[in-house]
Amino acid sequence: MSLVSDGNRDESRVQEVVGKCVELIKRGPVAFWLIALALNVPLMVLYLRSVWRQEHYQYIPFLLAAIGYLAWARIPIEVIYPQGRLSRFFFALSIAVLLIASLVLSPWAGSVAFVLLAASFLFNHHIGYLTVPLLLMIRAPRGYDSLVITWLQGLTTRISSFMLDLFSVPHLVQGNVIELADRELFVAEACSGVQSAFTIAFITLLVVAWRRRPLVLIPIYLVIALMWAVLCNTLRVTTIAYAAAYAQVDLSTGFVHDLIGYAALIVAILLTLSTDSLLAMCFRPVGGEFAWQDNPVSVCWNWMFSPNETAIDSDGDFRLSLEDDSERETTFPAQASETRGVNRWAMTLIASVALLSLLPYAARATLTANVANPAGDLLVDPSPKILDGLDTGVRVKFAQSMRNGRDPRLGMHADQWSFQFSGLVGAIIFSQPYPEWHNLNICYAGSGWVVTSSQYLRPGGDSRDRTEVILSRFQRGDGTNGYLFFTGLSSDGGVLSPPGVGVVRQIFERCSNWLTPRLEFSGDTAMLQLWVTSPTDLDPQTIAVLVDTLALARDRFSDQMKDARGASLASH
Image (cartoon, rainbow, N blue to C red):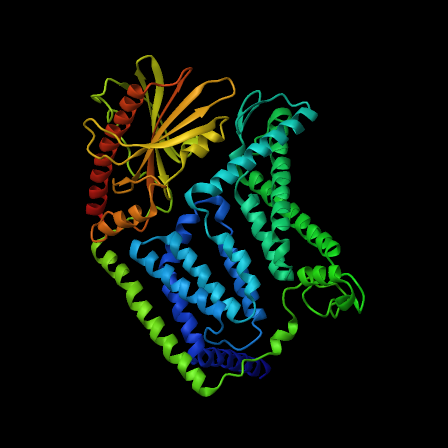
């Protein structure tokens, strides 16, 4: 009987919880926010699928779960419609960005719209400080996140080299590569994944939101997070190199490598918590009972770092919070007429946005066949003879194919051709797939080269597509000049405009292709580059020939990718 009664009691509890949830959803404000959130879901799914392939952004699901839990636990009032200028401003801006993102099918802009919507909801319910960690889910545009990672890898390499000197480990540093006696250790392989600087920054800002620290301290927290990231990665690199040099054990791959990474992450978390306690002690309130009236310095200090009149928690700990817990008991005295007015404009607005934002998805879903590539497989397997007979005077010869990340500096899959022209010797490399346009300048900056200038050049000659290619000039410490020409192709063979040629132009290009199957949800791209070194500066005629060579090669890769795309769609 007891088992039966317990089972009935549990069932009744479940029914009670479900009933309360259904009743809550039936309320206007909850339905309003759920509909607004649902409008962001399609682009957010595309965005999350894109950034998941970037190891340093794989913390985003945990970020969303943590902020969701904190918001659920800390909402101080009943869910309401947007009220207040700040909340309504963020909501209107979110709607505007969502409409633009839907029109041009930009998952990145969709992530911005989602964060703006979250900011509107959180500020509307007096927990706006939870918006700060959410900013880390927006990827930095134009590859600036990769630039930060490359800089941190260089710093880690130099510190690790110093540590290896202390341990008498013979090595040679070239860029972000540590060459040991019998192997090379690419620092990007030892400094990726869960212990990346972005992951540690996420943990740091989560601690800030959890303990509600003042916003003015966030720059200090982020700087210290970068410091702990470099320290933990230096420990990893030194451990891996030491084990390879003296024990002949490879710790750079496999389960042991992951175990070292999680151990470094735990160390970073402990250091972050320790730093938080130190800052809480350093920035605690000052002055006595009459300090608010007598001392302007104390007034300013406590206003910045402890805005609450109650400086001490119930458990005796000094608080650095942004808002007081008494907000949990506050309510908005809204009149019935005012509520009906808000209900009317809110539901009308959200319904209009739903129709406008979903129409582009319906058109693209009907007219575009999408083939996603979440595993990073080949977009196309180029023929070794694809570059034979280029009519520019450049002699091209196939060199090698590198598959499954054999050379991580060239992407997951790469094919390389060598070329000769007027005494110059260089390489043409086709690498794939990338989730978006890949700034190849960053790759060479991590190999000891310094960018001196970049420019856009339009090809001429017999090239079919006249979209600009990027020319970046590099220099090395020994005075050698490097020239990098590169361009991008979408997974269906379309030529991509280089970033920075103008946002308006890129929007018009995407809108012009709205009703064609060229624009895809997958976002996979391939990069084509031409690299050459020279002891002297290249003359304009030589640069023009190399640009035309790259453009003709791009035409051939584009044709083969279109053929492979058609065959793939036919098989589906």
